[in-house]
Length: 505
Ligand code: NG6
Ligand code: CA
Image 1: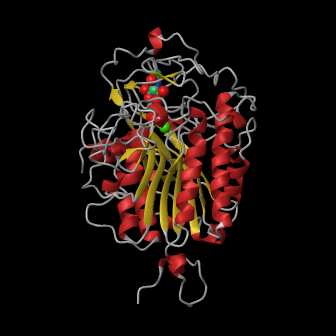
Image 2: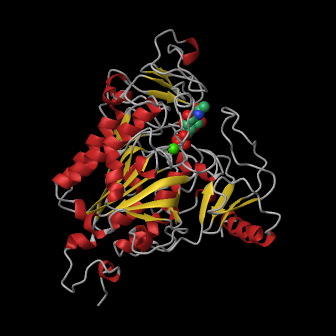
Image 3: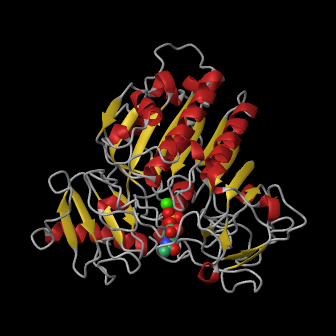
């Protein structure tokens, strides 16, 4: 007879039959947006405290060397949900709000995996992987012809892209939530609708001014990327985004507390525009960026509280992470840079969001499963989000269909803190699709002809150099001493791994 994985892992000492729930724990994949490795107090932040996240870490395993698959959102999330490196899909760059679905219905997603194995699945919050079958042709006023239901999610309540991109409405399953028939919605990423001012000729008051771009439609006094007309009462309120996400998550958990569920829960925090609820505003020394970190922590707190109240703590795995590294000025004048003080959003790493340096893709990563995970363990094992798919499949003993999650490897024992075994390598893609790869010993960035600084924010180091760059893990976390010339064999070996992925092998 097949031994249940839980006992293989040594989680149960007795041979008594396992409760169904132990074999099928609920899974919450809680993904923050642009939250840095150094932005949480359990990762060393002192100018902002994050008690709820810290408590989660104290009840589980906190990883110090975990990597997202990209330094921006869309490709990173693509890899997380499909178990396939984003470099393999040429369409995986940061998506517009009217982009077609990037994950195709015939692809096998992590949501499909859970659904096929008896779980109820949901995606709530930031999406940013396209919606509808055809870019620019979405029917925002009726039913979308393709939605998350086509890729495994029983329920979804999402923002199509980001809060700085139109359409600024929630989408529930296949249609706009709270649709207002008196204000039909039009969206374009090509041209404005003539009766609407853009930020460039807007005369009203602004909640938060733009510093780069974000100068097309103005919605709720905030300039956005893209043009939008209509929406009426369906338009979200920026200060309610976090409340809505938390409430929808709690509703889903409550409704499904008696059967196994998989919840892909994505906060809008701490992405720009940073416009938190009044409850959090003006309270942190770091200004709005500090406030939205507090708001993120609040979200974590209320979701965990809901699990506790429903008695689901020991029966729910919470994986908390971020989609990419942090950024200060990301296009709005919210004084993130000016008020930073000695806070280090990327912790002890070089670079930020967009970058090939570690700061672009090293992320907070906490795994907590009530009494099943060790309490307050810190793990230095190398972890990559690419392994989420195969690891969770192993956890629920679900077979992976042929061709599913081609790049994902099973590291569930490491993720649950039962082993310190590192992944063999973690590959990440910077904003211009330059790849880098980390092993326990090395960090390698392939040559790139991209600019050394981002064009719209020259304070952001990209990590792009025309020559190969090789750094020692552990000893040179700041990626300052390029050893590529000295260790040519290592360069060759690591480049070969990247080339194979790029050649789609
Ligand atoms: C950039 C935006 C930035 C952010 C990013 C995507 C400007 C100047 N910058 O183009 O604000 O939206 O795209 O971020 O418009 S992500 O985390 O969703 O990948
Ligand atoms: Ca992001």
